[in-house]
Length: 117
Image (cartoon, rainbow, N blue to C red; front, side, top):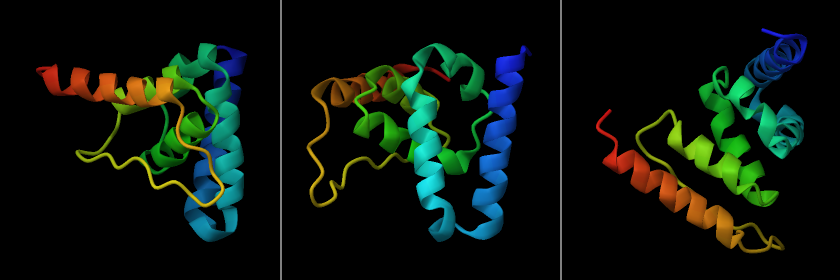
């Protein structure tokens, strides 16, 4: 791995350790902030998608929707680690999801259903 990938992997491991050791209530804003930064740069997604812990998929998907990152939405949904995926549940004062993000989610789900794996 190059220096950037090592740094990203190290950051994810640190966030994961904090998230798991101290409880989600205390560090949830930190996780959300990190998720926002990670999904903001699509060019780095091949590096971090391989090492994302299951616990961070939901915050990453929420950050991708909130920050209108349809490519990140599609990639996360295609690699979703569970059999079920729940999306939605707008919070008070939050704008509706971006149309491109919804389309990316639907396309990734359809691709997943047609995939023989």
